[in-house]
Image 1 (cartoon, rainbow, N blue to C red):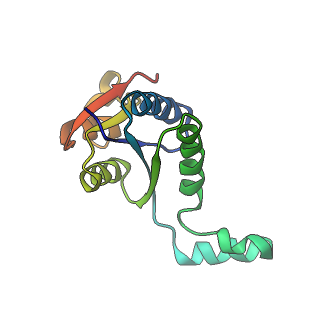
Image 2 (tube, helix red, strand yellow):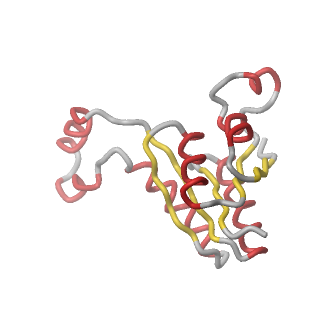
Image 3 (tube, rainbow, N blue to C red):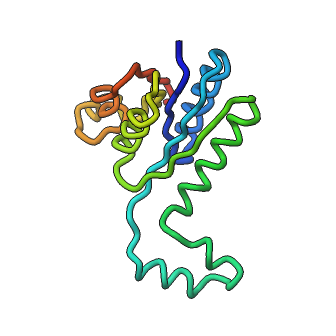
Amino acid sequence: MFSSIVVGTDGSATATEAVREAVEVAKAVGATLQLVSAYAPVSEQRLREERRSAPEDVQWAIHPKQEVELSLSDAADIAREAGVDVNTHPRQGDPADAILDVAEEQGADLIVVGNKGMTGAKRFLLGSVPNKISHHAPCSVMIIRTT
């Protein structure tokens, strides 16, 4: 039924809830989990300033994807602890676009996304990650109630 499942995370509690649900589905059907996290571009000047103020032994780790890689690592640990195969995809840009791109690239059968941002009048705003994904997904979408 499902062999590749995509789920996005930003490290928040609601995103982690969606990750846990995606892990459960992946475990039940033997699917590989594709974890996606997006980041905004950071100016080279800001990166240089942060590197200068950091201790020498950690300066190498300061780069635009730093926080995203930590979120992906934490989410991947959840999947691995459940015995689920997992791949991580840090992407620069809009979170919904990043999730949709990975779903297309990986030939995903399912995207799992939390409902945060789809309540009340907010559900009509363009830019809502779950709303955009539900309208443009190349595969099935499972919306998890996380709020």
